[in-house]
Image 1 (cartoon, protein in one colour):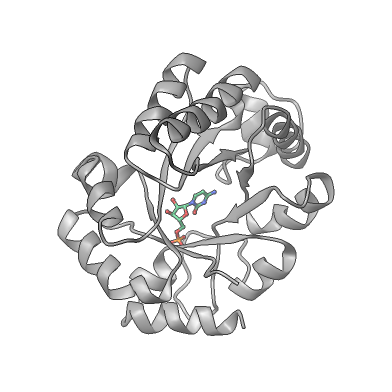
Image 2 (tube, helix red, strand yellow; image 1 turned 90 degrees about the horizontal axis):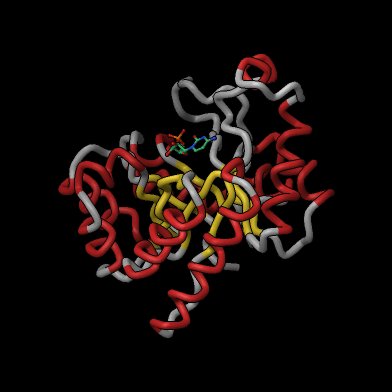
Length: 234
Ligand code: C5P
């Protein structure tokens, strides 16, 4: 089985990101570049991580009109990322345009299209917060609804919280890739992730990929931490 660990490079500088990536590369399957690092370091950080041979998950959570998102996805494909995120609440046409742009741009370059991952309901929102912005539904229902729109639009993957994996697996096709953050081993200090699963539990629940940040980068020895997580999966 391929290595399902996606290490989040949630560090504030290019130097720290490259150093961390080099240190843990043999123990992880891919690197996630999020908003902080991308805004600080620019597209060059993607190129530099790709130059090491590692796969990149560009987590910028695009949400805009279909034409704009399609162009952003095309630009991401040109950067040669293997995964990227869009907000499913952008709607069917936006999601379809994102998937089409990923496929078209990749074929033009002779590459495999990146996995366009749909983000459903942000884990920072609860049912009360949804009501406040005009959605009179519970979170679980909204997640299922957005996942269905994403599937219909042709997306091949979703980002979801560990708690949603089991239920989502019952409603989506087995080929749909599920990527989940909120992973904790139990060894690290308590932080802002409240509802977590261990790496093994998340895989057993049906996740294909695990996004892991602090348990690796904030560990005393990030390489050893990543290796331990990988071993725990076998
Ligand atoms: O440090 P930690 O393991 O909590 O990092 C998780 C990563 O996944 C971070 O980059 C965070 O932004 C991202 N993420 C998350 N929860 C979500 C979506 C993304 O923690 N619902």
